[in-house]
Structures are given as structure tokens and as C-alpha cells.
Image (cartoon, rainbow, N blue to C red):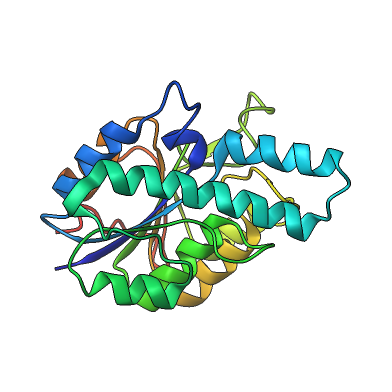
Length: 235
């Protein structure tokens, strides 16, 4: 059984508490677990950034603000675990080691952040390395890697295939402060470069996009791999 690690953006899973995609993702992840060994790392999204903004207004230092954001990622992870029911390991691992131990249960493992200064993208990249993943999936609110931020640069070019070095060249200079909102951060990109695990960046607003890519090979995002060749479908 092949192993997948999904970095699931908080802004995709919980754009707001009132309008969330938790039930939809629970259904997709449960079906994927019939085919793959599944790890999910959940981000904090807008709710985490609200807490971080409030922390800064109180003159709280960045490391502590990061820890507050991590608590929100774990709350999001807990909600997803609860929605998955018996398909998921029932606790949120707080380290990569705990995640690997939890995987021995044969269930979906869902975690959040780990360390201040490290985004959940970086957490997922290291987890993919330690778990020997066959692919790392970044399910985000942008449908791939662009030459510039398409939210602020209308004529930014989408890049469907690139190498880890190409990715590094694009993401260098990204923010590292608490709550930074990049498609993928520099630390994660460097880990992807060293571990040679293919990275798929995909529009996560519709969770069925992940199934279509992994199972059917229907993919419209960006694929980062050493050879530039497609690894999809995964089976």
C-alpha cells in the first residue's frame, strides 16, 4: 500500500466555522484510506491568523503567537478526526514520531503544527520524508504554482511541471513570521528538494480533486519532481 501525506490548508478545510469543508474531506479521506496509507497535516487558516493578530495587539512575541496558531491547527485537526470517526487515529500527534507510531494502527493520522517558526507545509514535508511517502500533496486555495502570487499579480503564469530547484527559486523571499500565508514556504521547499518525494500542489477547495489526481490521473495543478515526469495516477 502506497503512502500519501496531505498538507491540508486551514483556509481550505475551515474557511470559516460556519462554512467548512470538514464533512466533505472526511468522506474523501475515508475512501482514500481504502487504497493508501494516509497522513494529513492540517493548517490553521483564517481562524489561526485572527488569534495571531489578537496576540500581536497584546504585544505577545512571535514565538508565542506561533504556539497559539499551532493550538488552532490542532483544534482543526481534532474536528476532522471527530468527523472521520473510527477511520482516524483518535488523538492528534504532537510530533512526527507520534504520527509514525499512530500510523501503526492502520488508520488515517491527522495532525497539526509542531514547532514555532515552522509552517504546517514544512511539518508535512518532513513527515513525508520520515514516513517514506510516495507523494506529498499540498491542498491549498490556489490551483498550483505560479510565477508570482496570482491573487496580487493578474498576469502571473501557472507552471504545471517544475523541479525542486525551480520551486525554490520561486518561493525564496517568502514571509516566515507567525501566520504567514504562502502557497508553500521555503523550509518545505528545501525539504522537498532533499528528499526527492514528488510534490503535487492542487486546488483543495474541492476535495474530489485529490481523488481524481491520485486514482484517475486527472490533474490540473502543479507537479514538482526531480525528473519532471508525472507520477499520476499513483496506483
